[in-house]
Length: 472
Image (cartoon, rainbow, N blue to C red; front, top):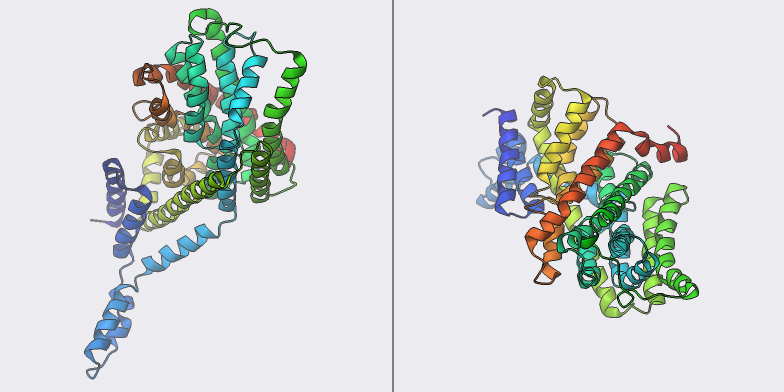
């Protein structure tokens, strides 16, 4: 078997093991080291000291040098270097800080106040409760970036309220599932940080480029919610006085000031400090983490138990991301050394694709990978396979990254492995069936594809803010 054939076998075996349910990070490390041991095997180098022993050497010397030679393979040097590279990556330093901000905000009892306020403020809008739920999801998802937390919390808070207001089960469930995934697109997004670390694209330009596409997708969701509520009023009845009481304007403004503005100011302070060059993403993440703590104290929600939970969840998620990077870097280094990237590049070039056809092919593959895998594995493992090909087709990695971020919304919404649907089903009332949730997310999937098409046709949506802030 030639080295390129071995590389493709390595990739195929990895996909097979993932479908069997093996932990992805450790599977990547094990396969990288296993195949790398063969790829870098050099008996003369590894057992050089052993070969120099004379006949008077003791058995212990022979045995110890044999074991030492076994671990003298360059794959172990590569693995250590890749681990050090990941752990010292300044871009990834922002990940635990943003995660900590999200987990603290999640426990600060802000979301229930925010949803109640927006629900009252939008009372006269068709589908008002759905609009309030989506905006709450968008703000909360932006502040946390943790899809499972947003969907679960909003499922406990907004879904019962919508069902009590006689909303259609599928319609209500689809709103929460779609809104909960927005945090992986709208900055400050953890996903964009991970993509920046994988691709070398400036995280600052990525954040600026993702803002308008994120707002575009939110706008499409809102148009769908309001439009369908107008065309089919039975799925989203107008709230009664008992469900959403009238509130004096002064009281409403006070509710907005104490629920909407604190979270909005936190998000804008983090984003503003990054986009205007006042702080690096890591420094802005530290500001956000401190701001989350201040909000928790202000809402009298900061307890030792909640703080401990936030720290634990932050460390667990950060460790997962870091070890995924270590495994991916090791795997991809061996895969490239064996000639795997060259084979894939030559195969793609043999298809004689146009840039549009390549983009469609890449996005279809990423869409299909979203069924069995989470966004972190797709960004860290598979997207780097496409990155070397972008220069061949003259595609900007920034533009490609925004399309991927839009596409990965579908990884949480597409049956049969729609994780948002399963998060919601786990806490939804028994009358809400999984098939109803799947039915509810389908129109929002269509909105994602429309947003991707609009971004491709009008790339200025991506480039306007980066060029305005930082030049071409």
